[in-house]
Length: 401
Length: 203
Image 1 (spheres, one colour):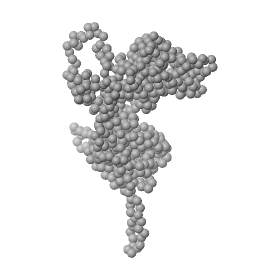
Image 2: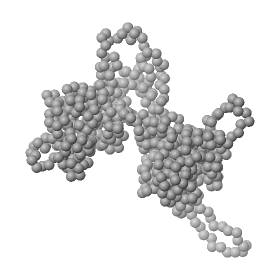
Image 3: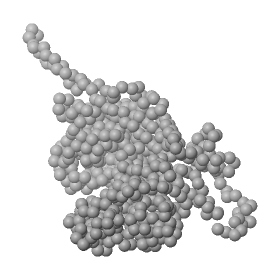
Image 4: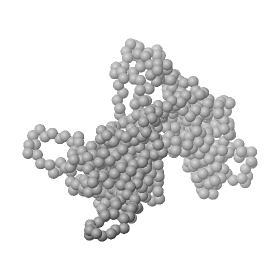
């Protein structure tokens, strides 16, 4: 301790500080959710035992036939339904009303008055929203099923039923190395046949190494959606995947005038698919620049995590023996998933937040009965995000950034 | 202090070495600022998943159990206040349960705790009191390897553990130093998981 305690400088000068400004050096944007909301797929969950989405998978009997013929008129099942459950996302922290005030003006002995630089309670609130949005964004690219034998390696039963399980065909590996034999509770390749199938497109080499992405790959991805009646209008990939796509297309572009060349690659449109870069979308390379769970040093919370405490960084996996020639993925091979690109029909998605305000970014504050100043604070969201027509969408992976 | 399941820890549990029990100190006077909700003696229980997530893995992965905020006595032998070492109630400082010291300066058998990380003598951090702890074996272990797994482990000088045999050991001596059951093969100089069998004491 200095003696005297304050120097003349310190006794007569404050530090220069801009009040109420705290720069965000952790969180990133969540464009996938934003684009889906803009597409109008926000469908509040009003309550019930789950979320059922009816689908048609079969047809009635019919044939070209000679007039006057008799037929045995039979009936078969034409339609069924997918079922999803609401998933609970919660962010929590203790708050001490000796230290900070919740806006009521009854607490915050320390963090208040003209000496307050920034409102710590507001920082906590905004952080909770961004934490939940980050979890949802990452989970949108993962799955929400239980682990299953050798085909699903990780248990994510509490998480959203995201793209990894939606865009699969029950045979080929997803970008995270899983094979999903069901979606929305419906068994793929059983009674419904290929109705729920979307074949992941592998762009790597036959030895499992990541390969390049090119114009042909983009056309193939678009074709896979179109041939099933889809109309892909939203492309999502990581920023590094976006760069790879931009580089592939730039190589084929020819400019008449290269003077004052304007490189404007904030968004790309390919055959009606508006491709956007999402920093939280699956990527191998992004992890070299973005702080992703579970690695986080001594504080443990200086990273971005999904609802299962991990991230969307892709990793090597061993492909199954069930692969199809359509995916191009070699069987029983160590695969480098690399970067991932989704061609999506936005209208085929649903975002299902509850309409109950206590669970729609609502706050639950529990006072500890024997503590003079500390409460437990929870921000809660009940929701799910899923796809009703997986075949209208497609995913490609295994390319280099 | 009460059982407190709602509290700040500021850093990961095995990364804390605070200059005050709250984790806050006045930057000018160095005095403790009591705010935020963390206090000396706060203790809480964690599930395996919670403990894993609150671990600095470069130091060690924590497991299910009871953790508490204590002060390390200023007279503790610093070299023995390290990850996996056993701390004890201060000899002459009894009956303070929230002040712990290195094994060589404590009362043998009195309120043993496990240090999660090195804590500067006189400063504050978290220790483990119950559950499954990572505990450091001595440089020699009487019954080592798979033969010792599932056996009892006892504390020994400098705050490490040994896996003894009954032969030649008096029962009261073993009782006095009993730490728990080895869940991994005891090996010299290594940290193994031990299911702690210690009395529940809070103060």
